[in-house]
Image 1 (spheres, rainbow, N blue to C red):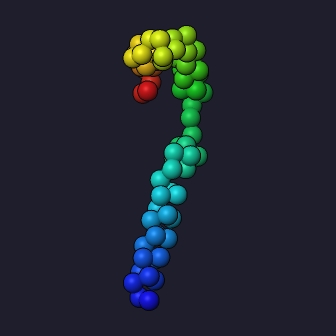
Image 2: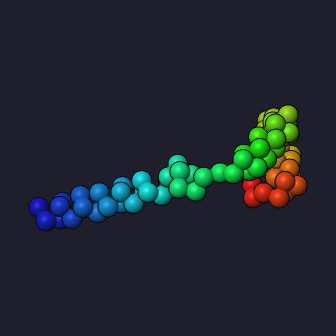
Length: 74
């Protein structure tokens, strides 16, 4: 009985910790500047012209280059 209780406690702690480590939690606490949002929109529009199944790595390379030109992390 003690072993089951310990396992359930460990599971509950793990689930609670993983809930705090989700990307949506990080977004809420950090916020995004309008310049970054604009850069992401522009770069997605440019890279979106190249479909993954046709262009392969070129799509992500185009996005990364665009974000670098806007002085933003990808």
